[in-house]
Length: 497
Image (cartoon, rainbow, N blue to C red; front, top):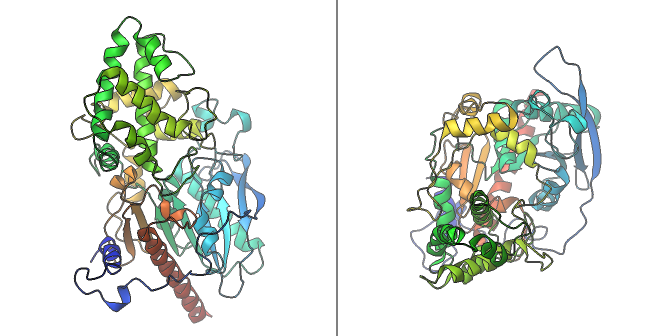
């Protein structure tokens, strides 16, 4: 039975008279194992120290001796030398303090795991810039922005910590990460199994490459989220694209659209319309990703279940184009102005400035080529085919590089990963990236957990009173397996001594 099926059984066991009998060992516990430390609690100040390590710019060559300072955070409030562990966050495409503040799960379980928490910043993001202000100046300086180099940074950091922190040398390390960081956590366990005993890869689309999954799966999941969140919601958004086109072609159409959508920068030419539609489409994608059951500010300040809030503006079908676009503005306003402080909508921004847009743009043009497409029939977006040549030409124009779409599957095995062990892949059903994730068990130690009503790496967020039962059970399973990895490590260590 797959682990996703296990979770559904756990959920079923909470419903009186539900389904077939469940093995007692699989039943949901009457009280979760972290019942004291893991309940929702008032916001607390996270206490950590900020440190730096000198890293080689190129771990795999011998001609460049240049180094840079990689930033990392350490919190050891609950760490115990006796039977403790090290939880190591594999930083992704942004400022590590921002990721630290949005990974409450690690803080919530630190005491139970007797864990030292380490948050490692990814090279070329935050303060960890190999060439300082010149890091993004050209492809020659960016040539060392790869997953392989980043994983090597993490490996060297772990060895450094074990060498310099008394009591850490003989402790197990577990890699954790979400989204791209989740991919790195999984790949880190695959490439450096002697350094980490296991990995929790949350919302990690390790199969969103080449033809491992259909390119349309991402947009279909976004559409499903909206169609399930309100009547006529996805249908109204699907209709909006042609409505924008029709209005834009009328005499005062560009000015009307600019005013109706309260744009900071007015549309002045028809070429601006495509950028506008791309910005709106990305907004719907981001809303699906962060469709959390409570107020949050991960990408933007948002209400609970923001997709449902957005869909309230699309209750009625076949409304005139002008009314539909006014409704589009109201929906966009939920994402960009929930705080009520925005005076206009900026089509150049869709998410927090803590994310490293430049670095990720380069990575997407080299290794991280994850195809997406839409047909406008089975999804709510304009038809858009995946055109590798066009994509490559855009990358060359922007960065002077050509993508290698096959390199990630070549490096990390694609779907042929059954030889690896001790990785948990968790995915929320609401998360569009789950389409490229591992959603069924591969082996007894490559485990998949699917989270009903879960959005993008919801399980890594801090516990909240409004969390669905599904994510509470998911975290319970994750802690259970991580504690088993720690136990196994110490059993092996005793046998060796």
